[in-house]
Image 1: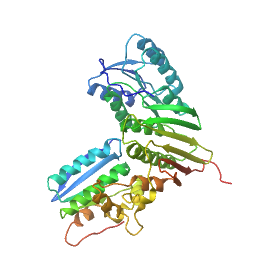
Image 2: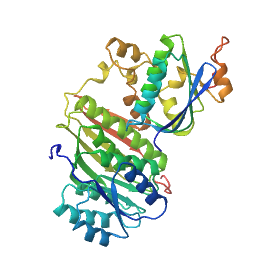
Image 3: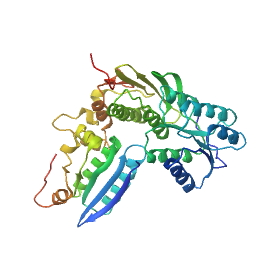
Image 4: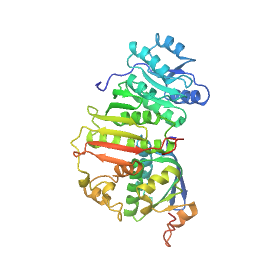
Length: 122
Length: 295
């Protein structure tokens, strides 16, 4: 499935629900455009909901890493929610989850932005 | 090898051989949303008759026929209308069919099961091309060993990757096929980007070999190569304790965050072997045939 992105707000956190694949054939660029727009609009806290993401390659990983770096430079952060299957395998292989926290439920992900810090489960 | 074509297509007409069900509805939606007119026929015989009198820009075959029958239809149509694009759909994967489709210059190939959205994306790609020029040339091919040249542009890479996804050999576990396809994609893009600089006058030479217990892919790019040890801006060379240290190198070099392709490919296959000059690479995935016992 081509990438579909739904944007939700929860307080000062923006949640992107990703459905489909984030790969080199144009889909990762779509994700990149969405995330760049958020960063440009001074959004600081972003959660990427990967529960329905079926595939990711290095292009998608690069966009996630680049966005996370941009947010952290601005004092914000990016968190991942519910990666599974092949996506989880790929993120594990490139050790992304050692750098970007991942959570099993949305409440934990949202709560991790608070002053108490992370509840990383991975 | 053919060079990119710059002429403008005057007519935008697609011929669809009916598959039935959701595929037909999907094709109608995608084509009509882009303002194309559609003619529909029930089989390849009708398709050939109609194509002899009407110049179609894109032909999409039905799922019920074997790909080789579609390739034969394509060969007849292209003999008089060489710029016709064809996307082959088939319910039945047969060894050698993917190669036959590529050799004849089909735009793409889908063997069931395939995702509707991926078909839609490929149809859009076919529609977006100003005119048809292949970019993939089969230099030699048997069902177990194909050697081809692929033009260094992203659209050609995407088509080639879809052809590989169409290689649904049931004797290889789906997870292994997926691993090979992802690694193939990463190395192909790497070769086209860094070896060929996405210059459409340049070509990457690729071999795909299906051995009894392994799949081997070779990529020979037109670049000057590189030394793996000097690739400090790639994740593959980041130390175990600091997996993203390459990002600081990339930033210092003015590169966007990235550099994960080689690492991902290396982890998904069993061996990734570069030649001394770094512009020639072998990708090896060992496989246990599905249903067989390892002795």
